Image (cartoon, rainbow, N blue to C red):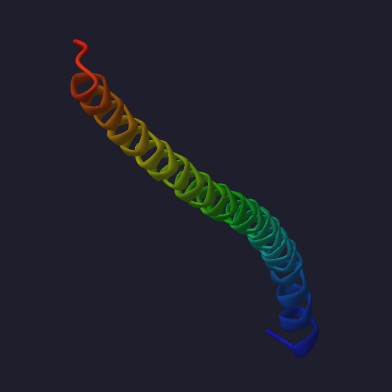
Length: 95
């Protein structure tokens, strides 16, 4: 085989190989873009979940504070009821 024949055969082989490499490279780029968008979506979801969890924790602390205040008010009212019953009994009545 002379040099011209080797060059022609190499050109015939190189064309499909180059096309296959380009298609494979494009597929890889598309996959990377999809994975990138999936990671961005995952990051957005994670950020939203963290923000929602933080808000729920704040709401929980506020609810606990309201419950503690209500319990303190109930204890105060029970003490007042006991005082009034004692006063009624001291004055000769029946509570």
